[in-house]
Image (cartoon, rainbow over all chains, first blue to last red; front, side, top):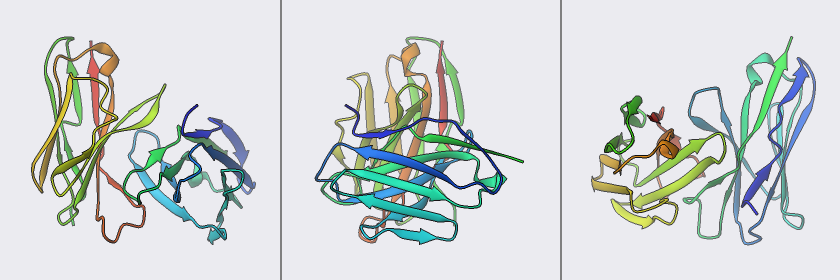
Length: 111
Length: 115
């Protein structure tokens, strides 16, 4: 079983739609969680951290369910510029520095 | 401030040849990571260093792969001999460990094609 699993998509949505991505992780001792964004043929970049209580950054909301070992990312009012691959990232116990990336979920927002 | 710098950006080589990928991390960052990305396997951590010392190389696929960090501003990933299945994008990333918030700063990657 992979350490971090995501639905690969693609998710094809119209502008203005709300879309949600899910991710599960296998190591129950994992301590830190993140979403990264990767544009086509570019490097990954940090989108946001995921906190236990859930957190929001503008149109983006991240949630964590430790009991189910499940992380989610909600994007409201999708923009064309949101088209990218979203990578779920988990740090096993031991700090932030060893990050395990999921394979990513591809989002395509169309006019 | 300059980001993580990788070279070469693209490399095409023949099976059996030696490949050396280079990375200059962000000045002041004390962690350096090498990742490999393929369509089939996604982004895999190969090895990471802290203060130039290898901490975890469990992701290095086999003895054909080696990585060094002779000083705080330079690291290499070497493949010898290369094989077609090594074709991938190799990313170097760095971070500031003590204040790390989970943000790795990636270079633009080195796209390797082994024929």
